[in-house]
Length: 298
Image 1 (cartoon, rainbow, N blue to C red):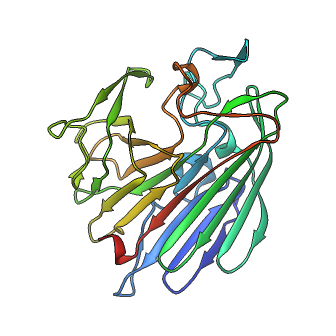
Image 2 (cartoon, helix red, strand yellow):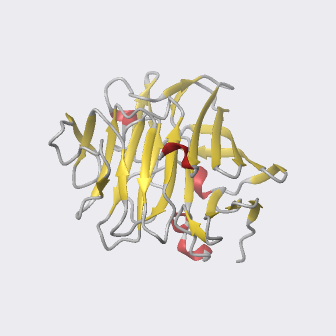
């Protein structure tokens, strides 16, 4: 199947989205002073059979990451959520990233995508993405409106995939990090101190081993320095996306993920439902991610 790409571009940048593959981003390339385009996001493989995680970025709705235990208890009842991906023990990242989105509006700077019929487990929702491209940044806003019959705990987030090389370094402050178990579920949140291997408050290379951890107390800004073949940039997120999940299998991977999300892994089964938004029917949750390649943040 040939997937249609919607492209918006200007003299400095071009972005492509694939509505039929979860409304995901296929590429974001930026032209440097030398006239050469470099990737800011890891480009899509171009093959629909590789699945949505071969795209450059995915949206996460109506929750991020995993829900354990077959579902969660809320409002006096248990709400079942079945696994949604082959090979995954738990449901992961909702269903928005697997659905077909329609194109509501499009002009030379903006694309608005719409998913009117999202649904996984007890969640029913209407979602909208707005992508705005300028010569120095891409802003993506994700909105979800509950169409469920009762109030439920919703979450959202973004799952961008960035190029990784030996030159890649990242910088972001955080207060705590969630350790994960062998099933990628949270075990405990520990404090980060200046000597910790979890401290990324200065420009730091990604670890040589596996990393798949959620950081809290993140103020919403991450700087990424790349080598000559990829673009350095600043990622920022709205205040309600105050958990950052960092994922990369190791130095031989050609990617890493820095995911601004609204809640920790398995928040539906953590005390107090941290970061989740209780949406009554017709209430809306929105969050924004911005990728800035201007020189202002250097």
